[in-house]
Length: 146
Image (tube, rainbow, N blue to C red; front, top):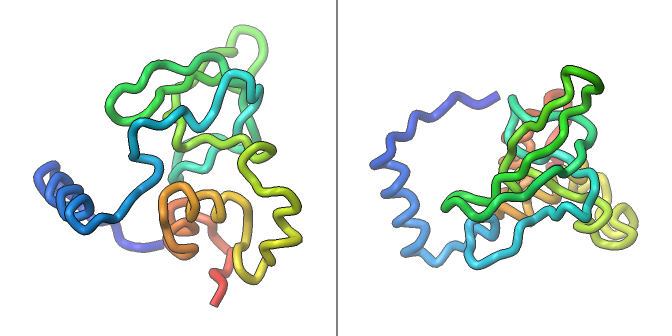
């Protein structure tokens, strides 16, 4: 696990200005764009940074309007009865694997290239390297491809 970096608001804004000036494009932060998930997806999985999020999948309840950061999405937690409630995530941390993975994914992307679908999707969506995606996902015990 890498050491945490403290980034002030001013430092973050400076970093974003440098990224914009360099012409680097981060797909998840581009507007206009549609939400990455829809209510019609039914269930979605989490590919955001850990700790946080959830394992498995959850049912999409509602997608809210763009709030300047992303599309807030309410998901039903995986409880039943009195503990059932909605949880809020941003759309860029959620994925419908059935829709977003290319056909025959494992026939075209070997495990030597990409260790799992979560990592591959982060490289596509956020422009991260495989090592960066695995670090954000906090996969322990998974060797990064050489």
